[in-house]
Length: 210
Image 1 (cartoon, helix red, strand yellow):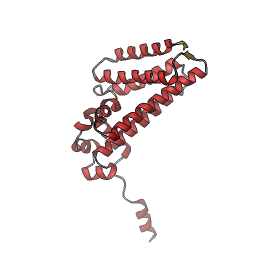
Image 2 (tube, rainbow, N blue to C red):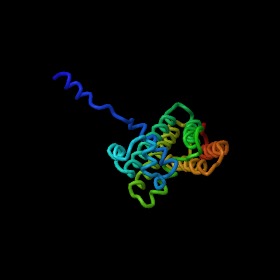
Image 3 (cartoon, rainbow, N blue to C red):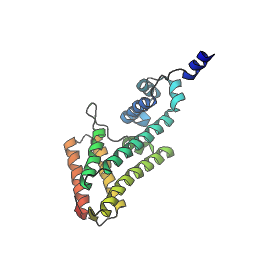
Image 4 (cartoon, one colour):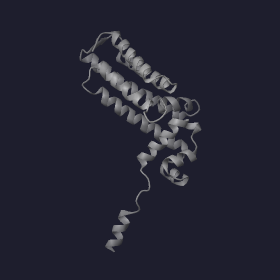
């Protein structure tokens, strides 16, 4: 009896890694967009047949929403870590843009830009749930920048004339530009120069920004 209970407790091993499956599905959506991604594409990428895919994540739409949620959460986490460091404001902003470019321009594949900007912005026109994810994601990234600008103001690192919330939207606008232009084929050197110029502009709005 005890042996049977132990076997039942262990159960059948999971045939897939949910995090890896989401990553693989994300890459399909990132490459083909929501409309261009078929269930066959997603099944092949995740190594899961359709019934298993549905059982684990729901339909294609539910799977896409989960990839967006995960992308936003991980993006915010990376941005927060960069901005929470002891780096001066300008260097912290540059670090965020460098991390973003590392995703937008992977070394082992073609330029792909930002998953959120590149796919959700199009789908949001006809899909309220995606539109909500897009809006939440943009606000989430704005908030990270705003917190860093607020900290710079409070610590005397910057004396910007604009409110931190407005500077945050400017910082996010540069992020969006990098996403779009990377997908359009701009070389990394040009994108890095754009980011550096944007940082200089934002820092120039105040009398001091180190």
